[in-house]
Amino acid sequence: MEILAYGVQTDERPLLERAFAGRHGLRCLDVFLNRDTAPLAAGYPVVSSSVNAVLDAGTLAVLAAGGTGLIAQRSTGFNNIDLDTAARLGLTVARVSHYSPYAVAEHAWALALAVNRRLTRAANRTREFDFRLDGLLGRDVHGMTVGVIGTGKIGECFARIAAGFGADLLGWDIAENPACRALGMTYTELPELLARADLVSLHVPLLPATHHLIDAGALARMKDDAILVNSSRGGLVDTAALVETLRAGRLSGVGLDVYEEETGLFFTDRSTEGITDDTLARLVTFPQVLVTSHQAYFTRTAVGQIIDATARNIDDFAAGRRSENTLVPRS
Ligand SMILES: NC(=O)c1ccc[n+]([C@@H]2O[C@H](COP(=O)([O-])OP(=O)(O)OC[C@H]3O[C@@H](n4cnc5c(N)ncnc54)[C@H](O)[C@@H]3O)[C@@H](O)[C@H]2O)c1
Image 1 (cartoon, rainbow, N blue to C red):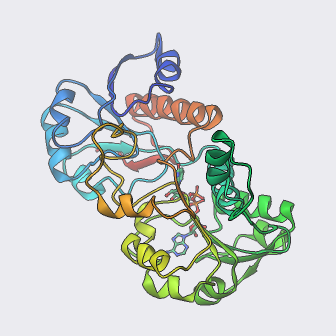
Image 2 (image 1 turned 180 degrees about the vertical axis):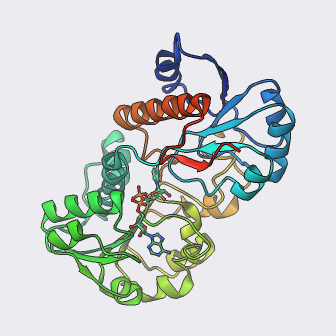
């Protein structure tokens, strides 16, 4: 089958090409799939999209009109895909329901530790041969109360690492995870978790019910010196409220791998032209904030697993099979 893959990162391209060699024809594009770029897919039965694609009704209509049958999304989250419209247009949609949760949980911890121990500031200083410790005071994670919001696959890994540090665990989820309980996690209501945790890490999916879960009210409940980490989806946090919280001198660290307005910005180089997003621009000026551009999944292990699963999704589509990765089956 002929496949058009959008949003392919430089490091990802050789892995994709190797996985598809001899099986399918593959054309890789670095642009993201949206209304403007969808016409490029005309004549391709399979389109593979990346996490920041905008698969709204307009994009899907262009794909369907161009003869695309399968959208093979190379991510777990699918909040960017209008599944109802895809079904109505007869488009099959598959995602990658799981891959190394360690990749994301480890990156969430990298953010937590970096903001706690002020690593960015320390690295900038030592590069200028400034070896003072002023302003670099952190806290032991051992003995901290760590609140895990969403205790599924990634939340469980995050909790496991927390337990290794010797932290006390609080959890919030609509369904309790026995493995987290076995680690000593106490499940609480969300307001209690927010009030008691020294470190709060978000691992729920972005759904209407979780949109702006961390809003001004939730931020107000958190301890003044708490650390907030979001490696799940930007829309979980009301960023304007977060900026106000930071302006008020609250929160000792914020580590964000995702941002609610990241689409069209993350994964691109804006270093010469600057950005027009004032909220993000303001956010990165706070010394206790560290932002990475949706890279938590970006390990050799996880990307390899995503590509293998995408290849299987394409084989399933060709054979008319359904799998746990099927979001909209073949009609
Ligand atoms: N930054 C990245 O690179 C990256 C990579 C992969 C996944 N993610 C994000 O991480 C999220 C979690 O992934 P996962 O593999 O652990 O998913 P998962 O499905 O294993 O776990 C999600 C958990 O959230 C809970 N949940 C669902 N709806 C809820 C609600 N309304 N209220 C409270 N809890 C709710 C579920 O019960 C489940 O335990 C994904 O949805 C995705 O958005 C980010």
